[in-house]
Length: 185
Image 1 (cartoon, rainbow, N blue to C red):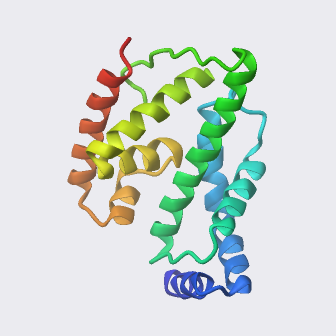
Image 2: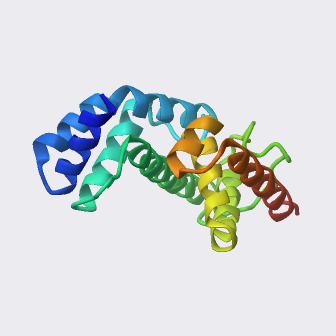
């Protein structure tokens, strides 16, 4: 299936709408699982359900025009980034509504990616810290995105980033240490 999916991804990247729809149908369950994992960690941030998050993610990906994905892992990594963006935008809107447009930042526990606080302020603080981390260590930031926002395991992340399992583990440890320091008051 991976070979045919890769072929469909390449066709979709060249503008074949039917291939794009087929990719969406083939990966829908995986995208739903990613969305379910993401929303389970932030229940108060949004009233969106998994289907709505998957469809919003797909619409964002489609609005970018022709996208070239090397394989299934590349596609899912990109979808994880899109879901992160969507949930973060929802948290910003929610925080703006609750606080009259002024976001009050709160710290997260050191187990930031294992058990996220469900306040929108925490998610916004995490997003800002991830932006800073991505400027310093882009791969470590991608590991956090894929693990935290997409719910991917270390082996899947290694496949997507084309690095060893140990490299993913080191990046994860480095990212956790950075985020712990960045999110302290």
